[in-house]
Length: 158
View (cartoon, rainbow, N blue to C red):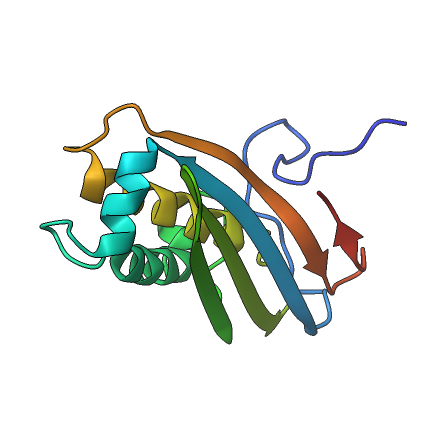
């Protein structure tokens, strides 16, 4: 079975999907990722000793702001009036910060890209704030883990 890609017109050119005929429904997406680092770097974050400030708090705000600006970053995303963006960053000893973003909207299109963007930018912000201590950090496993709403219903990932 071949899945038709939705962001191309009949001539094969990139195009924004026309969602005008879709019903507005409640839609939710959850994405996760992690930043892996040296144990000493995680200890530095947890102790609050980073000179640039509260790493996890700043990264949380960056993720929220990024979700709200996804349509400016991803060319074919629709601008959406998001009803909720939550970004949680949790230290995962000995060597990682786990990130989860939940995005909600009542609208005609989903919020998967907004959740993925929130996680990605939160991870990049962690990296930026502590890169002087650990340039070998890795951003890993950014992925969609849940989406619900719309015609395709609920999807669960790992």
